[in-house]
Image (cartoon, rainbow, N blue to C red):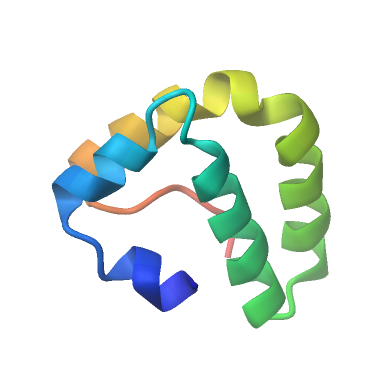
Length: 74
């Protein structure tokens, strides 16, 4: 799943960062941390799934426009 999201065109990544669809980027972060065996990232992604989804879409759009990737700790 991580490779699929990484290979998306920039416009598709931005569309997926819109408020209702941004949960997909949270799941992407979770799978990315699982793939890298990053326990802190896994815990943080689960927490964001429940409490951080309300503001994270804006951060995702900004980082996608400027860096063509979502911000994450690993």
